[in-house]
Length: 376
Image (cartoon, rainbow, N blue to C red; front, side):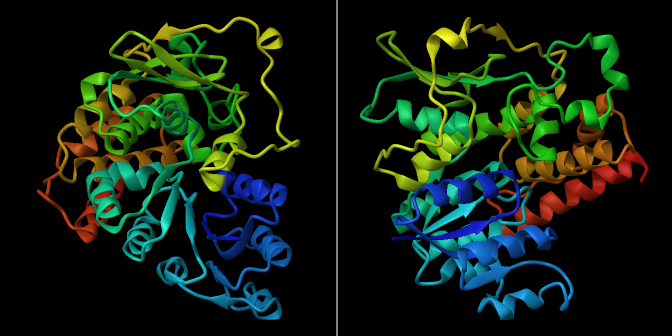
């Protein structure tokens, strides 16, 4: 049995990870669960999966269920180092799991990575460390996971990566209406069920910029060889074009459990009767269109920052985190997100070859600076 530590177990990816575990009870043992404040759901998960280690926030009374269920409370960094853990699932949002991810790699644990911010902020460091420790970093997100599957058996000859984007909740909205869009409208994603942060990032296409950065680091592909296209149906998750002109595309229904299962069971493929199967007839027409830079200014901004390296991507992550939070709390409008991030980054003093502490500090700076720019 493969021992799992699930960081962010009460979030969207975390709960879907545990749903996959339910389908393969004999293949996995849940050793540790980490969450923040969703104590009620965490308690339900603890009672079902009986982990020996738990990390969470809350009062002593809120966490009383841990002792009654035989759990030990610990930091995420200590959880991932436990000898019973074989695979660490990073399903958190933001930079909260970066330290634990580094600790896990240093301890020789494989990583199933859904946390975009960790690799955006510290992709070069994480991938070098993983190579040095002989650790696998397995992408959980549907798009990089699709690229990973398309590259199986292909040792060389990549001409281009083509990452698809749904376009988010406002992809068909009149641009003149975007200023008045509410958080509720932004969270009404047409094809995916995700957490609030990533759903807003989908509406701005910041999440797609993060996936380009992720693909650059994970697959070693130059920036200029990564393309993004809008694909509203979310059936083709990504494509790889090879030098001979052949293109491999990964297709499936839009269900995060499919890439999660592939990563958790890798290198095996096992049947799961709980998964919906792709039917090309019922899927109907599959369409594509180019990315509209004017509609998605966050994408262009993020790519400008990404190629600078150093601590720029970390500051970007922090500023985006704050801007999205401000929008969700109705402190700024939807069209204010990109200007707030851009203005916040103007004052960044980058650090060359940063340490993990300096990377986390840059993200904190970006978060605080964005709030200052927004006047809150």
